[in-house]
Image 1 (cartoon, rainbow, N blue to C red):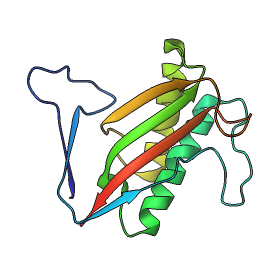
Image 2 (image 1 turned 60 degrees about the vertical axis):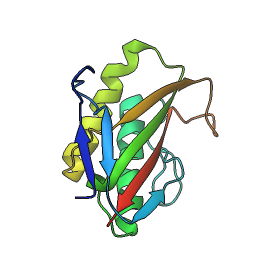
Image 3 (image 1 turned 90 degrees about the vertical axis):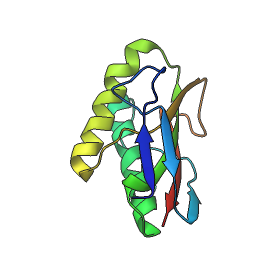
Length: 135
């Protein structure tokens, strides 16, 4: 495995993400932000944050596997959510867990969640940016 996840002493131990990812591979992969679109570019989950989170995670997985990696190789996620408020955490978590179950992966990574006013298209509620390190 190219990425080791740790929660150092002296920092909180969160359930939904890791504090640090240590990457030891030889190829760094930078993904474009992945959104709730299917392979044909059609919207998925319009108005449904959980459904859009699930599809965005699926798209991250698809992109990583296309270059010979796996979700285990993801070293860092940045997640942008439109009009973020803490009450959206349940829907976000639901979508992430559905994607994890569907893909058979562990979605826990070092992550930054950023609330934004809007994304590139008006129906989008979430965008997931990923960096992976492959052997």
